[in-house]
Amino acid sequence: MATTSSKSKFIDALRNLFGLKNGESGKGLPDYFEKVRTEEQANESVDRGVSLVPISQIAGSVGRYKDFDAQFRPKGYDTDERSESILAAMRKGRSLPPIGLYKIKDNYYILDGHHRYSAAKKLGHSHINASVIELLPSKDSFENRLYRERSDFKDRFGLPQAPKLTELGQYRHLAEQITEHHAYLDSQPGKAFSEAEAAADWHRTIYLPLKALIETSGLVKSFAKRTVDDLYLYISLHQWKYAKARQYGIGVDRLIPKDMEEFRDKMAQHSKQEYPEMRREINAFILLNVEGRHDEKIMNKLYNLPEVREVHSVNGAVDIIIRVQLTRDLLTSDAELISQFMQTTIRQWTGVVSTQTLLPGVSMIKDR
Image (cartoon, rainbow, N blue to C red; front, top):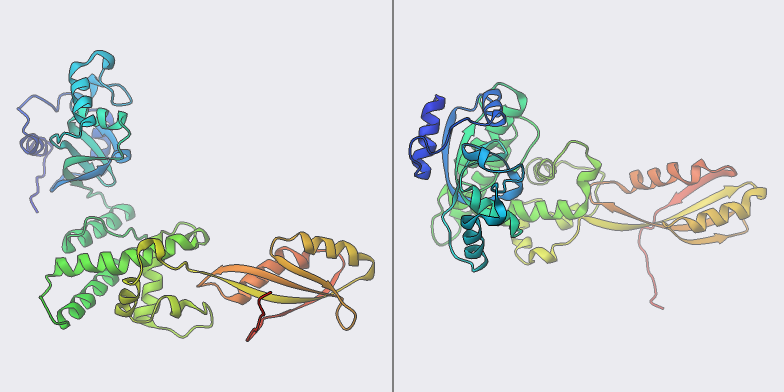
């Protein structure tokens, strides 16, 4: 990792990387850029090479910012011959040199290639090819320590992107998974794998499939301030490392085996579009005792609940029997889901004296 510790050396490094002559850029650096760089104490630079960068993450400009408006369009845009020639080349699919960017945390700033960026944005491109130098934040803050951990993890294993965790000290668990997976790959007949190759295989065949299952489940909506990657770590640790006995989540083991390599083999049988969802339907029968004068009103209210599939008025020890169908993610217990449903609906109603919930054990249903 090559580093520089001063602003002038950093600017010189950028000029050399992007082939700019001294004085061609860097005049009158925008206050916003300099403010971010100073606040983050971002002086250590790393050459990230050439990659596709999301246009939505390009937040500013360095150097020729006065020649462009707030939308990064060249001033005099409609008559700018260079812009029009670049647009024409892009429309024809011609290969153009990568633009020059530097990165501070998750944002990028343009040093060279404003016209190419402007044209790509006008054409609706989502990404643009760019040479990137990253400035690593050194200010001592929780956010920056976490960012450095993520960056170190990504660099160690040569991954294009690293999972975004929200707690310090957790990337070691992901590193352990890669190390274990590396050992597994090396134990199989055939070629030997480098650490980077093993990490890439883990990323493609284990991390991304489980992440996709979690994303489609909508589970992250139940955990404020947590990311899908936080849930990946939680689920994978509890399935593959701790293997704790639990009373919740019946069905998790069928979807996510307790062995990481078994999960990999199982996911290899599916395309991404065919991954099973981390959700299941449960049926429950609820027996209600109600006050007679509220009987009809409660029957109608029950019928109007979308979760209620059947409503029956009966004679005997109970007054009403209903069948409800609820959908839960695989980490939520049936009892928790049913309790939440009851507390927010039926048990709030006037006239309901008591309820009893029955969960089927084995069901036999005839097709009509």
